[in-house]
Length: 558
Image (cartoon, rainbow, N blue to C red; front, side):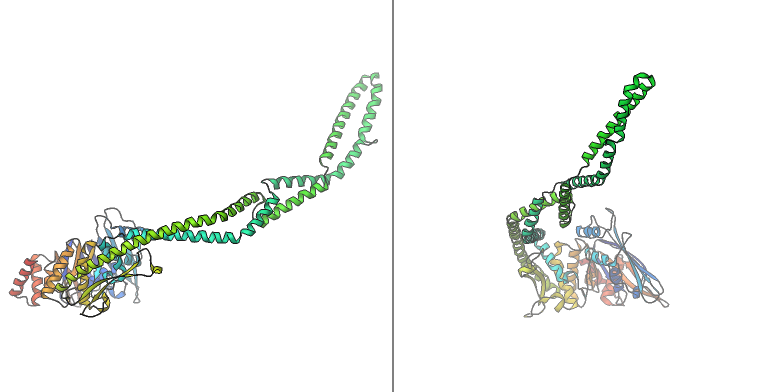
């Protein structure tokens, strides 16, 4: 609920700090004292449009701070704050602040904060209906807005609206799964012949992981052998011919062997020459082996190059690496298998979607029945409140209209709207279309009383709901406001002494002038002050003993 309101430099208010309590708080004052300024200030902190005219003359800045306290944040409010990324410590008050600053050229800059965290004015507007419910002469929100009527009726009916919403989302998900599967199956079926052709090509090609690397290495080796074979042939001729160095070494060794025994030095020379012959022979063997290894078969090389070309062409065709071709084959087989199994899978998804549709329809029809029954109870409850509020010729009806199937949704099968007829025989129409300001406020009060147990915003404000009525009607209004306030906090701006006498707290709004400066102030009245203010409301500027006596009676009765 609203526990404090601090206003600085807003229109005629220089500085004002108000504390509020649970129950019914009434605000009274002479016409023009500034009651509307107070509501404008509250509207500003709840996201209303910032205008330069709200800044007090002679000031450059204005600010309004509203403090709300809750035993625990209402779930909808907590969810809205969480979505906006605003953190509020558990057990701490929610402080909403709005600052205006003149830009010097007739414009105004606005900044907003929630618990000292900067936010947009748009967020304040989103939070406003969760914090304060304002009903005035030109109310176009709250109970007047048809978009909220369905939720109000569902709470009144204690209906399973959440179950219907969950069933709707389940149905949507099931239908989307069917459509996605059908689209995949259609695309796959269209590509089936192409898949079969591509798979046949790859099966014939029979690619293997690592094959490209092996083929490339073999090709490089054979190409290298082709380049070296001529040089090796010349080397072999030089090394193994009859006039080669090796033949000369061997001949020299034979001759030296015949005379080596003649002298020790010749024996050593023969040993060295034998070693040279052995080394040269090993070199000859290695040259032969190298020549044999590097011998290339042109046909084999051609086959290798053809295979590499085919593998790489297939890889380019399928936009993958050569080593990924086997995996691509497996994927094609899986796609073909999916096509074959697709009809069966689609049938299963279709069955699940039909089941989800049946569950949604059953829940939605049960919700419709609950709404229809609750609508009759609500109509009766509101009708009981109309006569005491001088609306005895009026009628109230909760319209529950079945929607065409294409408009069914998470909220069920119905459109819900509160309608009224203000005169016998007149057609029913939306609340704000045919009711005058005073009638509209009283209709809203009757509806609020009927819906009292269904909750709403933590703080409810009625602005001059008693305009144009008095006597028994004003007393009935006061009694109903007091009854509504018993379960929470309700503030009423009133001209009626009968309503003012019902207040748990009474605030007097006054305007004073000092020279050319005019100020609006608000005071919480004590018992004596309440008596005097109610007497003034009864008699006017000159408070008479009779008015004070009547004020006593009203306070005592209240």
